[in-house]
Image 1 (tube, rainbow, N blue to C red):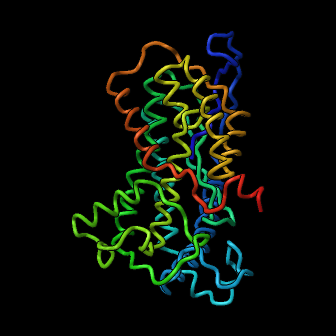
Image 2 (image 1 turned 180 degrees about the horizontal axis):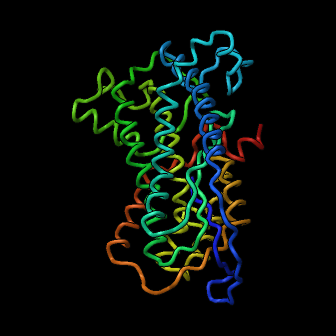
Image 3 (image 1 turned 120 degrees about the vertical axis):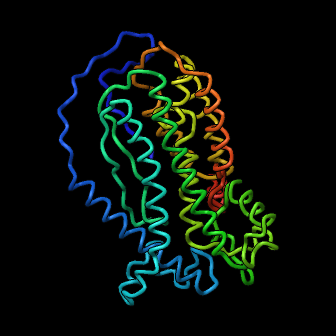
Length: 336
């Protein structure tokens, strides 16, 4: 999701002496990119098939009629292989969103003459079938403007495509029948409710426009949009070498370390009261996020880019889901 940077130079502090590293010659491993892509298509098709099956039968995406199915129902598909194609809407939507995010980074790297790899997708037998994607940047970024543009291009591209996928999904969604266990549902970011209300005002929702958002059975493509929005919010966290960290560093290099620390401290109470996964992100930022590759301080960035940073902040607000899963806070886990 966020790009990994292998710099020519890095320093523990922006104004301390620089440690110089000699880069190795990189040979593209296209076979690895292709293998990971195929693996991710397979794993997302598997989980997507179960989501589509549930949707066709009026059930929430993550409802499991048998606990033995697990979160990755490959044996359920083995019994009836024809179900595999049911996963196409979810898998295609999610792959396009992830690819858009990474290609946003990649194309701006090419624009600025920065050496970067093609996206690496990460297949995983998990709830969503993937852990995302990333690119690796293998040469230095020469200016703060280039760093800003490369950092923000991915979230904007992924967000726009995810909004398009969500718009299609809302048109395909239908009323939710009966009671639904909260554990079978996700918590949704603000952008979902805003788009649902906009569709209701414009009369674009077929059969669900008059319903409150909580009474809508969302199409599996909406789950793909949810993953895309969640990935966008994670990458826009203002710290370390996440996209949000690059944006902060490009705007004000001296503030990067302090903003990263504030972000880490803010994630700890979020883990306690909302979702334990925030603790993992705090640890990851603490381990690897206090450093940033050196970028020339001058010239600075334009006023237009500073305004665009506010757009990134707005995207973070509307895509962030503090408690993505019910009963997932550290306190609720400790009290079980």
